[in-house]
Figure 1 (cartoon, one colour):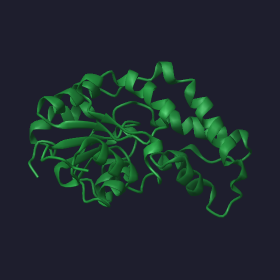
Figure 2: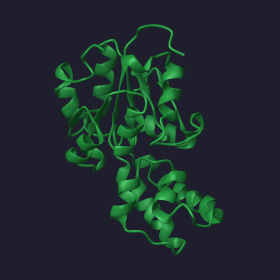
Figure 3: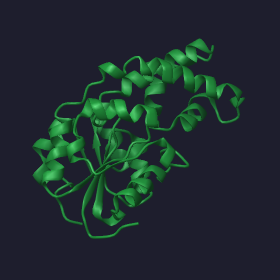
Length: 225
């Protein structure tokens, strides 16, 4: 629960701070291909940002036989895991995180990545000195677009929804934030267009962390709520 009037910023990580969206896309594509359930990459890409449970419902239909879901998730995790040592942050992502902390914002990585993936993401970002709290998939009963991971981020950091901004790269991020009346700043570096993010309700849209950092003083992250 919130304990003070501290302001904060919640960051999605995959596709927002670390350049992983298309790695997840190709990993799901290959996992589905191996299971003889091919789905076009463009369709998969549009679903990235959901949790794996909702992603598979979205791609394969909610009425399907779910018996193979565990194997599909394991195949994705194995394929994606091959990239862990090569993950790279998006432009100036660590600088943005540190600049937010320097402005007195409590910085939270509100990621729904699996616990075993979070370490690789944090190593790639390399900004632990400026981060207050980090969530993972185990902290949320339901994945995005449900707001559970944001609720967990607020509870673990002592922040209140009325005092934070969320930064994400997908329409699912915007939808999750909207359910808690949290303004969402969108970044297009995950491959979702400016129009799609704005149309979903993002209060501002920037190209990537570097562009948000450059405009930070005039961005929603700087405005008092």
